[in-house]
Structures are given as structure tokens and as C-alpha cells.
Image 1: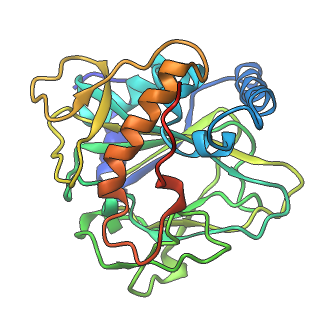
Image 2: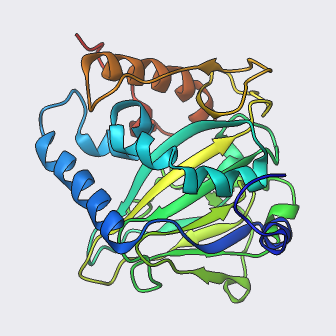
Length: 290
């Protein structure tokens, strides 16, 4: 298999369900990406059909040019290819932010629980730090090897201090002593499996913790959800045609991109909110654009 990871790194990922840290961008590039992102937050504040934070948190690659640039950078894709192979689709990008001094946390969970992909191994999340992601800043913690189990039961909490869309958490006890701290410096990246148990704590520092979180799948990843699913081919070939293969419009927050964003969100919401005990505000429909 081609890609940038060594055989030992690939073996470690297979064994542990995660790999970090992986250097991607140098300090100047990382600061540039952060400046562009925070500039977009300011420029488009209060000008869009939804709060700009909604677009940052879900499917950012549809409306934000920079999200696509980062996710299609060869240094990112080469690492992902080492795990998934030469045919790659970008399923989602989000900017996951913890503000300075926040008590917001992410509970123990498995990503893939609500994605409508079954228990596939044909996906990987690449989490790239645009600011310091230290233990004090609320970096991720992983339970090594937990991806080797099946998807376990989760429960919705809708807790106010939980950054997940429905406050979902694993419905079994997780021993904190088993957890490994996955700290990242700006410009570094981690890879983790969708069944891996992971969580993160509050940001007690005076800087924002900003992560660009990219979800990659193989084209033959099952699509088992209630609604249609969408993805963007970024390498190789899609022979399975199991998803709507999209090419988002160029630029930032164009009318066409905003329209496509609502189309994708509406279709995916049927899967991502299935079984929720309350309304999941992040996936509420929005009036058509234009």
C-alpha cells in the first residue's frame, strides 16, 4: 500500500486504533490557516442564513474553501491513504473549537455510532490542530485498542456542557486509567478509528483550541442510513457509487454552496438524528437559500 506512513506506524494504528502526533504543517503555514479561518468567522458573522458557527461545526468543506484545501493537502491524504488505500472520499470536515476557559467537554463516545456506516473499518478521522491542543486545552484522550470491539450502546444526555450534537455518551463505564492523552502541537495531526473510545476535557488555557477535523472513507464504505449520503472523491476512483458524489462550488459561502449545504444536511439528518430523544438543533432544516 502506498502512502506516507511507515509499516510500524500502520501496525500501531491497526493495534491501537489511533496514531499521533503526525507533523503536517510548519508553524508559518499553521498560523496562516488559523488567520484565514478566524478571518472568515469575523467576515461572515451575522450575514448567513445560519450562525457561522453552524457551518464551521458541520460539513464545512461544502461552504469553506480553506476546509477543502486542508483536507486535500497531499500531506494529509498521503497519511490517510496509508490506512485506507488509494481510493478516498471526504465525508465531512468540521472545525471543532473550545473557547478559552470553557467548561465544555466531549463525553466518551464512538464516532461511527450514528453515521449510517455500520461497523466498517473503511473510515478514519484526521484531527489537525490549528492551535495548541494540550491536555490543559482539552485535547482528545483515547482508549487504545477499544476500536477492536463492536459499537457499544450510547445514550443521549443533551447536557449543556457537552459539545456533541446530542450529548451522546457510551452507556458503559470507561476506566479513565486506560486513557492515553493525545496532545498535539499546532500543525500536528492525529488519526483515529470510528469505533475508538475517545473523549476530551475542558479548555483551561487562555487560547482557543481549534481543530480541523476531517472524516475520510473508502468509496465502498456501506451506506446504511435512512437518508441519502454524500461525499467528495479526493483520490482514486469511486466504483461503488453508493453515495452522491459532490463537487462543492469554489469560494466561501456562495449561494450555490449554501444551497448544497442545506441539501446535504437535510438528507444526512435522517440518519444522524435517528432515535434522538430531543430535537438535535444542529440538524434543524433551514429555509432554502436564494
